[in-house]
Image 1 (cartoon, rainbow, N blue to C red):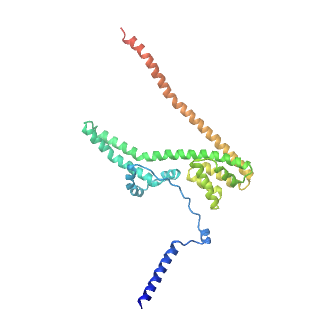
Image 2: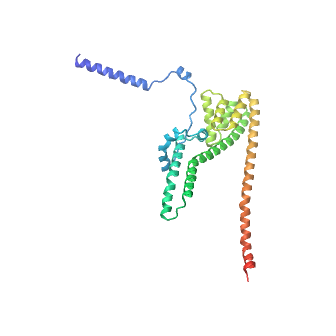
Length: 297
């Protein structure tokens, strides 16, 4: 084979290989293949975990904690509710373990250098308590954040249901009323509802199923009840409006009762500081007179 023929064959082989790689890289499935694919899972908009130096150092312990079965079921549900990355939670747990293991001995050495080191039993008890606090601190913070987001989602649902009823009374259809109601209002909760409705419309998923999944994701039973009302009412606008109006009224009464209970609880908690302040004021006024009577000449 001549050198010219060998070069031509080598060039053709190289061109064929490059064409095969390009075809495999930029190939697009057909419309029939796309329609036959199952429904894609809902993409969770996980917020990036931000932390300091200790949290970044705690990422080293993520594989070990994952192998131990963390996060648990409750923590996983709260992480989904807060749209948080499990890696950040595990990093916080690992940094807590690191702090609980290293900080008490360092503090003990500093106290020993000043001659103020307590006994062995007290030191071990304080070490154990500090380690337990550092271990459960991420869980307490996560539970508090999940409770606040759950409450905000429930309050947003109450306003959303009222807006849907208004849209239905104005002559809009069920889908149009839900879309119009989600277009008003800000905040992450309303944005989540709006994104869920848009996704259900694009994927041809029934709205009641999308709302049911949203309630399961954010641990909000009110969404499940609203989805059940929409499923039972079907496409009849009058029945949907009646059902949603009743549901919105129930949520409004429930939230007003909860707000009143919280206000009464805060009032009762404030009574003790007021009583203590009044007692201190009386003691301040009466002490000179009592001192003069008891110890005066």
